[in-house]
Structures are given as structure tokens and as C-alpha cells.
Length: 242
Image 1 (tube, rainbow, N blue to C red):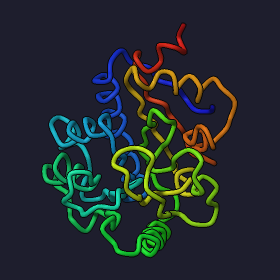
Image 2: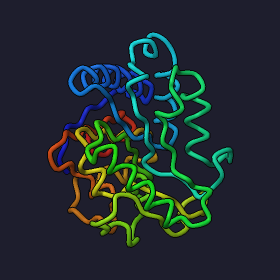
Image 3: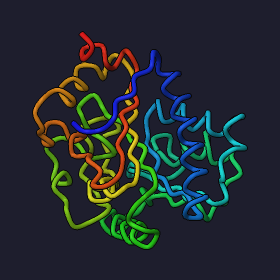
Image 4: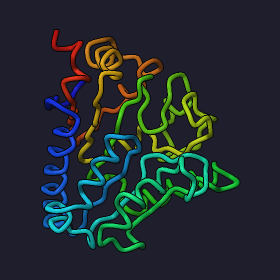
């Protein structure tokens, strides 16, 4: 796997280092291009990051009014459902940071026609510019990232920027909307946040084993021109460091 590996002692240290990098990147993008576009990830480590970004000293350093927020994936639930990535982000970040509602672009997980919702979101990504400044991603214990799961058709989607998926193999067992590798790999920066002992075995396979996106979908993340950084803790890398 390509990309820079940065290993910290604890998950908390990973989150703080990521917050520092986030502030610097946001300021740089706004200075250079007038705006900062990034896609959110679900999961416990990104959730901790959003809480930190909404607090001081980070919050006041981020140019929120020039920041556009997208989502890497969403569950097929209402936006106020406990399983909604939007609800998590709203409660932890959006309600606490000085964000303009028009700068937040959520996926319509509640849509009756998820394929149409995916098409709409793909067009939105295209209109905003196909190169996001930052994609925040995580890796599941099964090797999935965003909602690109092992042995699913979306792994080989080359045309669309966002797709609807079948019910996920992990809880909650509902269909999803997800950005595709086409969108993720066009990003200027991709940060893969992986922490915890339960990720160690999979991380070793992903980083040290052969490339097989059917088994390890996260291996399909390979920015074409952007920079990829793996932000890891000691627990997740314990098998690699032996």
C-alpha cells in the first residue's frame, strides 16, 4: 500500500494530531483557492475528531464560512435516526461550530429511491469540483472503507461518483449511499484514521499483504495525484511492528 504512515501512542494522540493537520490544511486551502472542501467519515475515531474541531483552541482557527462539508457515506435512515452519520456530525460538530447550513451537503439516506439520491449527490460533487481537498476515511474490521464492502459491485464502479449499495454486512444492516473510488481517489488529500486493537489483524493484511480489493476494499483507495496519509495508533499497528 502506498501512502505515508504516521503512528502515535494512543487513539487520543491520533485525533489531536489530525486536528492540528486539519486546521493547517483548511487555512492553506482557503488562502490558495478561497475555500476548503472535505468529506466526513463515520465511526468512533472521526467522531472524536469532530468533537475536538468544535472545541477550542481548534474551532476559532478554522475558516468555517469558507468550508464546504460533504459526506463519504450515509445509512438508509432518516437524518434524525440514531444510526445516521448526519445526525452524529450535527450533534458533535454542526451544532457547535459557526457553520452556515448552506455549506453542509448531506446525503439523502431517507430517500425512497436511493439510486436517484446517489445520482443527485454525484452531480453535486461534480458541480462543486471533482477534487475534494480532503477525504477523511476509516477502515472497518472487515477492511471496508466508506460503505464500500468486500465482494460488492461498488468496488468496481468506474463511472459514478456516488452509488447506492445493498444492505450492509455489518450493523446496521441497511442499504447505504457511498462515494466511490472515482471520487475518493480524485481528492487532493486522503487521511485514513485507524485506531484500536481490533483493527490490527486487518491492518497487517492491508498494508503487508497482496492487493485484493475484493477482500480488502480499503486497498482501492489510492489517490491519483493527491497525498494519502495513514494516521494510526500503537494498538492498530501492533502486528506490523513485531
